[in-house]
Length: 202
Ligand code: GTP
Ligand code: MG
Image (cartoon, rainbow, N blue to C red):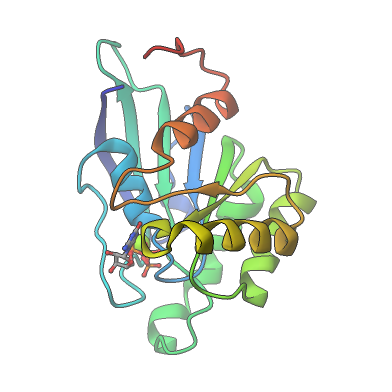
């Protein structure tokens, strides 16, 4: 299905968050796991900046999402900075708690946390903390095993089993921002979480 995306604001402070008017999908996780790339692959546009160097996204960037043919936006995407990358300078990360924590705790419209984890990297304590936090806060979330294009068929099966055991979830969604694998399944999870009815064939 074709969607249109529109950049709304880069927020470095909770006061800059857009009014909570639309169901919101947040892309959360450690630096460099591929959050911004997942967002771009969903909308089919390079609207969020990505980089091979961790720490690319440094503010919470909001994008309105509108389905083709619909008169107005129905969803908001929020691309968050990554956390837990020890090599980032303090000057970059010092302010993050001031706006990332309020976002996670208080954002009333958060409908789904999309938590990409790098399928090739062993699970880190901070990955587990994020998912535990979402679970304890009663926030709906989906763990996605991204960069799955970098694994062979058998490695994929092993990685998905390992990840669902690590995170104690029934389902980890295999995903590749590079090939588009998993894109339809993730869209379905997003529409479901936002309680938007989308025809199966769309
Ligand atoms: P921060 O904003 O720094 O927290 O990073 P991020 O989580 O937004 O990661 P980003 O999307 O910038 O991607 C990090 C690196 O991973 C980039 O070099 C991407 O090209 C690469 N990457 C992301 N997704 C995929 C994927 O599905 N497959 C492969 N092969 N590479 C990917
Ligand atoms: Mg990013």
